[in-house]
Length: 112
Image (cartoon, rainbow, N blue to C red; front, side):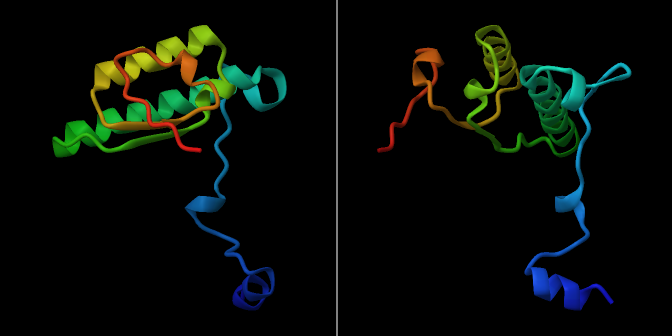
């Protein structure tokens, strides 16, 4: 029934990739009433919690991929994120437009 419309749009209309997380802080919808940094912090917290859950259940830490988080977080939030990443000890790839924010203990690969 949906297939003709999906073919026309060249995209699936249902599935987990279409789900939208709503970052909330108590009753506050951070998409509408919070800062971009607050909303991104909630989503990153969920990602870290998921990594911890996977590690707890499998004994293996998954790979964490973060795309340009330094551009969306203030310095303090970014530092807290780096601290948490070091604590959970998983292999992490971070893309950033501000490599100067990364510490010396993090290996940096410059492309371009």
